[in-house]
Image: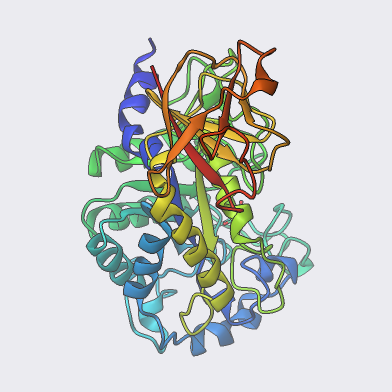
Length: 436
Ligand code: GLC
């Protein structure tokens, strides 16, 4: 097998086991509170955006609380925006003045995040934007995304992209040197003309790995939510990344390479419709939907990272906390059907999903069934079944009306083989099926 693929498989072992992470999008944009792209969407100048820098003071920032919430939700790793596209750094970089320590808050927010999450045993990830709308040497006029892309005053203004590359390398060096062991580096993102070696990607990846040998890296030095890049081939580049990251969707069959073989992947999704805090966005997914999205990813061999968008005070909005706590309640009883699990040996059942970990097949029952719960093709293959949440017996039915389906197994919640509803957990009732 290709050495790079082998290394990737080894590096991502913990990641593919842990399955569930917390994404955190936080920065100056939490003050205008119209999402993290606000500067670009509204084509604001640096000066227009400056008041938020002058004023940024998240007095309620208590990363210990964020970390506790992540832990309670069952999340095993976290990824924080150390710098988003607006270029504002949440860490005390020696290479710029545009950083949290120069705002009224005077804190290295990244350091506090790292300390708090590490203390809870949560693995540490850094999101780092390849785009930078503040740095003078990043392409501006005519760029696809830059806030000044249409501003004639910027036409012909020279910039030296090599300076930007040096800046970026310097910051990656800072992030991967000054904060202890870092588990994930989440670069974001490439677009036509700004991809791969434009970022000096080989150098950047070699630098990152020299500083943090175990580090896993996403695939956006080459790709984006729109395209995965050579990670989907049998011959990935140095900078192809360790995992693919579909955005705001879960691929129909999970993510595979061109031959249909599985590759590591993680779907990233928001709780409402924005990554960065958006005061008016109340379009929240239900905790049930998040639970089922997580199970969906695992059933297709992938991970889920769910975003929170803290506000200008440093609080994770109440509705987001509530969803994650509800997810946590389910996870407390059912996480064995998530951690270490993946795609099952059996096809997706009509009433829900399967996940599997060796001899343990987890039946995630979403829909009440008419009659016994049918597990197609499983007759004679089951040793015993338990309700995962309390360990109570679930019965393989021998009820008279299933006699004509000898290849299939049928389950019920009572010994006489008739009770299948109401389901004990309307979010997702998990039956642990131990295979022979
Ligand atoms: C994007 C966006 C962004 C967000 C990210 C998360 O590509 O530009 O704002 O940080 O994806 O996946």
